[in-house]
Length: 298
Image 1: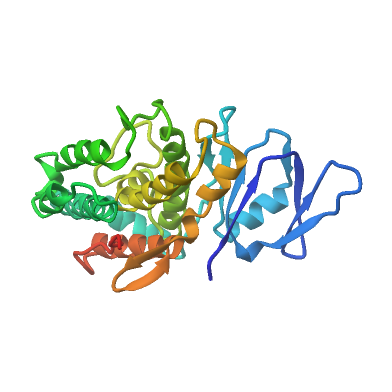
Image 2 (image 1 turned 180 degrees about the vertical axis):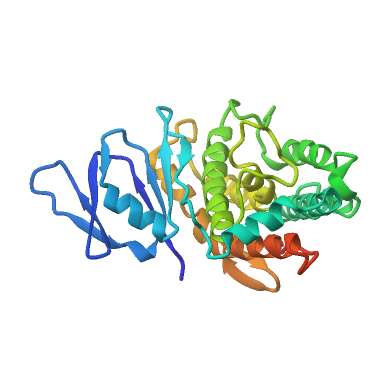
């Protein structure tokens, strides 16, 4: 079942009753609304005047819903994590922490090859110069020692948008604002999937900055970034004004968890596909497999 993403941009009081999330509004005469907690995959809290009960937080976490807080700039800045995400969590932590360096390098090779191939397929869909990316995807070596990721990224961003002088930069001009928001949502979904698979999101196979609590999420989401890029591309083409990240634009980006992706020969909602990816990653750590399942952009 596709989980629902809830976005709260206005003041509200959130509580729980009979396994439902109850939304109460400060406006006089406005009726409460309810949502079954088991249907919720993500809750984004943007307004500082939102109040949650501890009982609701506990139920959301127990149902593996990602609860995301936003900062003053209205960008996601934190995600709540459960202490226990899987019944075999201790064993899975051990397998992850015992992974050898050659295995990690092999997993990073698979990850970057999948990312570059998806970037090439996206450029192909947009009738852009894609042939170099398709070739580079097959040339990535263990650990990506020749840094094909950076070379491919430079080519990809130079060719994707029909915007003169566009540079992919966190604090750059639009549509960087849309990409930042979309990637933040994707990161939260990825962290949720990792925790549900009994893995530590802070211990990466490549990313290892000591200040990064989601290093593994940043690794595993790489081949999935293309789905954010695809959605943002459509918004750039169809929207009149993308300078301000409006509620309407955010609502469009909240479709990311439900986007259809092609993985292992089948179409699947992105949120479900990510769970398959993280489960396959655990199987690699446990020496049950040598292949991570990643989606192939169609």
